[in-house]
Length: 163
Image (cartoon, rainbow, N blue to C red):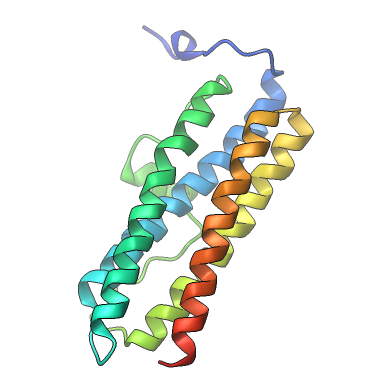
């Protein structure tokens, strides 16, 4: 079996779908990076709002992880290949990791808010590439992912006001 055997049939032009796949893979890498950071903060949050933040971070991580399969499958449906490993994710991600031994809760909220807003920008790049490629399926589904990331950013912003 060769890479050509993975070429999913599509009526979309291959050179146009490559830009869609690149944008989707960038958003996928950022989604995985944000998922892991959100889980990290879920595991390590402390302070007077521990329970609220712990639960919110877990809910948000679950939502982020829930989009990853749909993003990767959309790449495959366009006749392209997607990310294959942690190293591949690291090569494509723009969301920065946080390996600090301690992050205070207020900084966690702000960092995750900013990262979710960066993910919104990644999704907007997907939308633009899909529009240019005439890929209406990707164009439509990315709106839901954008709305979810905007909602997460909003919740994090509001929670940070009292932190």
